[in-house]
Amino acid sequence: MPDISFRSTVGADRLRFAEQPRTAVRFPGTGGRESTSHSDRTHLPDRVVPGEEYHDVTVAYRLATRLTGRPEGGRSDADGTDA
Image (cartoon, rainbow, N blue to C red; front, top):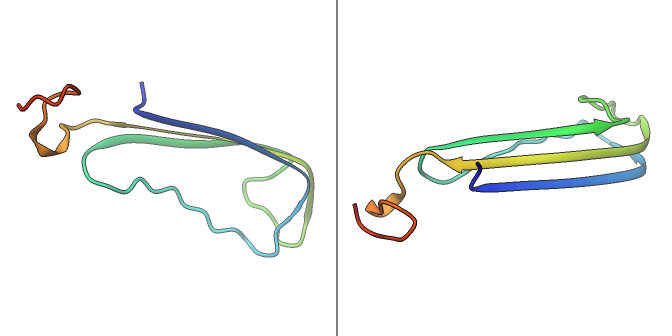
């Protein structure tokens, strides 16, 4: 079960990119974690073509992360007791 989970869905009647988009997903911070992100696209290819127009576009995006290591500061669990 993730510590953080995010879902979003966006849509557009028409969409055109002036240039190839540059995207990145980062999970900054310290400590070990397991993270995943994924998008499901309707009427939009994985690599878009600049200048081409796409119609009736939907993108559903999911992101989840969970901490895998011991919390920082020597805490042993969620109630804040020291290890």
